[in-house]
Amino acid sequence: MADRISPEQRSSNMSRIKGRDTKPEIRLRSALHREGLRYRVCRNDLPGRPDIVFPQQKLAIQVRGCFWHQHSGCKAGRIPSSNLDYWKPKLEANVERDAQKDEALRALGWRVIVFWECELKTDQGLSEALNFIVREKKKLSKE
Image 1 (cartoon, helix red, strand yellow):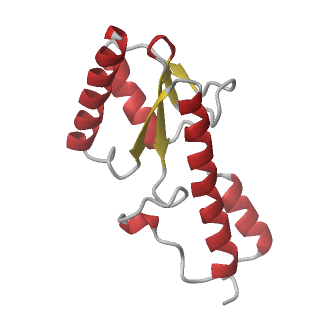
Image 2 (cartoon, one colour):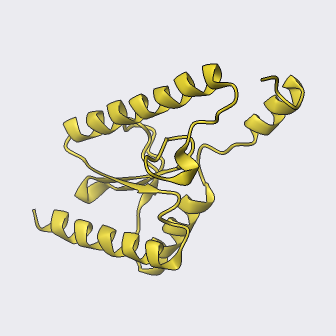
């Protein structure tokens, strides 16, 4: 099936997709900040550049988009039915790269937590994520 828009317009649309400071990321970071928790953002020296990092506890948090990172069981995590030859390898490569980067972080002694875009959309989901992070941070501080 042919694309409905020109290659130039498609390129323009794709170029505006953010790699960092996404709405779910900012929403979680704001909640953490309101709780008095301080963190680092997108540490370039770590595999996969985790979105949120608590260096003292070696806690890395990844906030992943359901579509781009193929959240299984999520409506937004489906591979498009059109242009399958393009999308399937692209999205599968994202998933594989995520697994490799997470494993590399774990090999360095980091605890990796993944939150999905759909989990952080609701106030309840955000609250649960915040509580989970606080518990993990406390647990890791004691070790």
